[in-house]
Image 1: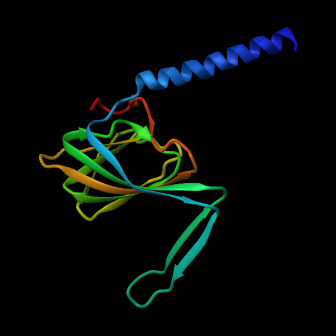
Image 2: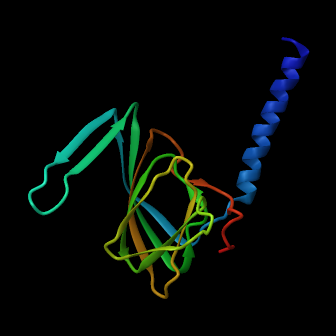
Image 3: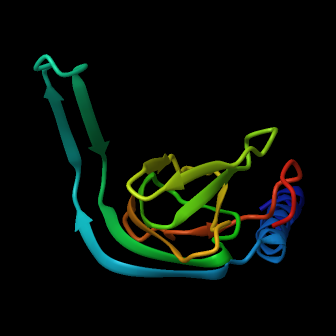
Length: 171
């Protein structure tokens, strides 16, 4: 091995290690938030498409889900105390979230205005995952609850903490 190659490898490993450490140190922890896994299942390749044709009551509906390789599907129960927060985080795959009690407010790190999006009982929303950093908060005075279904690559870390973005106020 050439001497330059060795030092390049050492420098590269140092940069990666420092970045991982910095992300951990700068991460925003959850508070007043409890996540419980209700179910977890392993799937092989998924390749499904469903298309419902209009029946006079609305537009056509299309659903496509395609994966390559094994996936883990999680069903999560999330409970937010008043003022509780998930902390800034992302997931390696997408999440479908339904509010089952109270209301939650979502903030997106890529929104320059960091505008709040409020979701109440019966409303659902999608977290696209894949590095999309977000935070959920209970800004109400009663407990809030959500049920979340997540699909991620098999054995992937389901939740990845992230630092607070500069464009959002501290929570």
